[in-house]
Length: 434
Image 1 (spheres, rainbow, N blue to C red):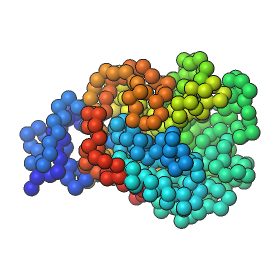
Image 2 (image 1 turned 45 degrees about the horizontal axis):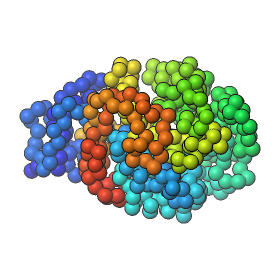
Image 3 (image 1 turned 180 degrees about the vertical axis):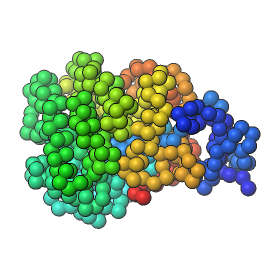
Image 4 (image 1 turned 60 degrees about the vertical axis):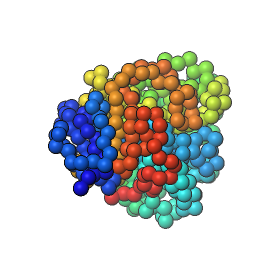
């Protein structure tokens, strides 16, 4: 009997080596791997000669906005951007308007994503004064923002941090946190003050405060968007794969603050871009020392006026869903990152941290969430993004990898610049833990 789909004669990574294989897909799962000429019959066949067959990326740090911020991004454009970028699973942050602090808001986001999605969508919840435990079955973690709490009147002193850590432990969820010990009341008057307020010292102090609470309660901590070499060293000193994990963004790995004049918000983000030394050390922390577990985009879309405003008035955050794969695979193709590290930090690592079953690996019986990629030189252009956010600090950057086809649950979602299905058809919402 014919399987649903054959990905024929593509380049598959086996034990860090490129091999030519075919992959059969049936009923949304990977049915098997075959040598050339030994494939079963397929109802549909894609000629993958010259293409890399890779697990779809899992981006565990994405701001898809929607609800009252749909002018910046919504679940349709955000997940279209993910599919165009070879990303098959995204996890949406809770600092939307309104924030995800109650079951009601979570249900609104689930309903919206269910109607608009092009890929799998998971969710995090924030922590208010009273935690709504009814959200737990439908979230993958808890996320807190010590520098900018989601609810007025909350201050991240030791008592509040301990409360969050205990909640994470109680519900067996990772506690993700934005490492920044500044305050909402800090109002920079100059660019120099902005960078001083959001300094590496502030980042390190925040991580240390959460580590102190972790020692007592043994919860699972995840440090978001590590940007400083000192932070990476601190994490390495307390390394514990099951209870302390961390992520880095491509922009903190590949861009430094001295590359930009900072006249407007093109390269404004939180945490800010750091020194060339920090970027170098973060790459080492990811690949050589394994102090950092995964790569996440921190996709944070804003409107054109918000990003073209003068630096101090501009919004912080950049789009990243359509640049992560090209940037990271360029590192592979130019020999700075191994295939093993790429697959760990972009695919299997996030799945492991969040406990997402059957994703992040090309293996028999796993979900057929797959990206086909062509090795091709091209230049990043924000005008071509599917995201509503078009301003990127990577504008004009040369990359060597182009996502060609994105498959979710065995269905072709995106192919050669075209979407092959409509919104709300493919993908799981919400994603649940194993």
